[in-house]
Length: 379
Image (cartoon, rainbow, N blue to C red; front, side, top):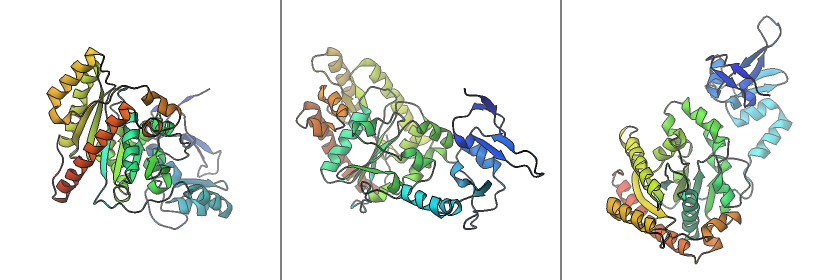
């Protein structure tokens, strides 16, 4: 049975979900150890604010994560890095820690990108059921098949990217955002030229972590900055929400692709996407632009699909891409852990996505030229 405790730092009542939220500390007078409760990693870090430095290397640092606090042989220690944490735990534990952090053979480090910088594309819509994950996975696979080095980042806690590619993963975006794990140790090689940084339910805790950080909208961009050197393209699959993690994704992205199902409610949702992009541009000061609106689930037999497509073309002009036609192959592919191109490369939807890739490559070349001249993107 779960119990509610008041946080010993901010007094906010909460239900314990993680081990770091409860800690026993010996009192100065040697009396019975005191049990403390912390609602967040920020409150835990604040409780250790008097730490003078790393107990392994002596380096002064700020305690920001639960991983910075090490309990060994009945005593509390502070470690500034995974290596120092391993040293404090002793050689056998250190060996186990190093082995767990060593990148396995399926995670080879990609050579530096041949491009000036990676093009970061966020696939984003506040509304669910528009084909964001299918679009992200298919575009990433198509770019990789053409020889481009691609990183596919999942920022949706449902973890559908890994499922769609038939991956079983241990490390996720949470470990990079919150634990500070190097991106090259967290990614998984899913296909030739295609690396994946997956997600799972732990991203809920990452949202709490982001909320307490300075420059909280740019934590993702900071943690994934190395990706711009390693890859040609970074595709970010965003969750259907107005979350802080989505703001981070947009502050990391160069361009936004908005998949829109061909129905009335999805059309209404596009307005919110445009407002969010303008918010990121004007209020957060990051120049992200709308690459295009992609009509999905287009059924040529349905009048509403033609009406929706006509409305998008009228409103967005050339930024409205050609529609992705509805086919059952799109739903079959994830069930087999395969991409649409692997499962049905000749299907109508696969052909439509290949057309989007052609447009993206042309747009990316133009964007790189503008970046070299110092120009920013606008909506």
